[in-house]
Image (cartoon, rainbow, N blue to C red):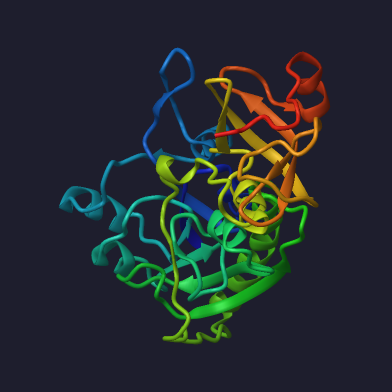
Length: 304
């Protein structure tokens, strides 16, 4: 089929690669515009932009798809379908209606749970035991369309946002390629989403990333894993901000934020977590034992 692929982050690269390998014609890739990044604040294209450009695929980076000129350019591609994977822009009705077969989205949750921008992080932070990826037909609503295919995966106690992200990207790539074959043959079945159980995966805000040690240990652990490696859950120690990048549940009770031993076992509102990997502001990530060799944390120290 003749496709437009619309995606921006690393998550979308494996699905795009799968479509290329399946023999589909990628007429154009749409991605978020380059943005300032790094210490020099130089404009940097998205990972999907770089991937597509290296393969000689045309890349378009409009700031919006609401202008009539952009919609006409899109319609002129004469597409069979549009494929959306973590693109980051709203698709207005003229864009959704332009391809012959419509627009399809690969979404990293089991809809209707975790519609929206941050489904992987939210699932882990909420303590979900299972998540997955689904292919749905796009409508004007936010992730409301009927589902064509899905695959599930368990969220283990050691999983974080990075490990689940990579697993879902790989699973989604295979699922997307298989589903488009059925769409092309007219054999795909579309199942409306349930009206019950809807939750929204709102974008992670900076205000949410500070650890509240008064929360139960299982919630603190889920937060750390859900925000690792980025943006990272953080706390203050000796007046400096530090990220907690890896932890595990521990045994112990004390005042919230109190060090219960000299190996970063930290009391929570209920139970405790042991920090295994941390990152001081402006420094590289470190294993806990390496950090403690340079900066001991004594019993009774309070983290804020």
